[in-house]
Image (cartoon, rainbow, N blue to C red; front, side, top):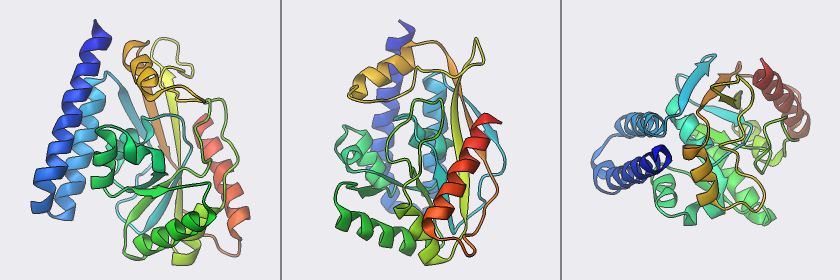
Length: 242
């Protein structure tokens, strides 16, 4: 019954989020929108029974490229609860019920990873957003991992920070089982699993807490995008295990 109640609360909050973006955002300033999104994300995590621990220092403002590992459909919600930013997400998210319209309203950039021309167009959009002083978050693994480690980073999206000459800040996500203190599998979203199945396991499974660890911002210096992507991946791995 707890899982059903949490799922109903999540749907209710999703509807509230959709209404806010549709009817209130046009009359809000950007700062008000960002505060609204962050508050909504935290309220949703509370309703779902998910704890949040933030370590390190989130960026006070942009421009900065947040570079994170990717584990779950929850990742965007969790990072928004820690610090509002624009996301680069797979194109499929745009078509998800309720979540898609909200992600679009919150400024998400969508990427079709199999289309090289589209990827490069998104890289240009990332660079433009960074030049405009925004915080943009990317998941360079390109897919969700199983939580036991960080997959190799694709370097394409890192190019946006190089082109705009702005820092990147590593960010590590970890889901921790409240009872055991070990990694939790409940919120993982892997392979051919459906979104509905993953959401249900997240709300009905054992309680867990999300640990969000922010590292120190760094600039590319004389590193190319592949070398920088590799170094950022190593730092995210270190943060995840700390």
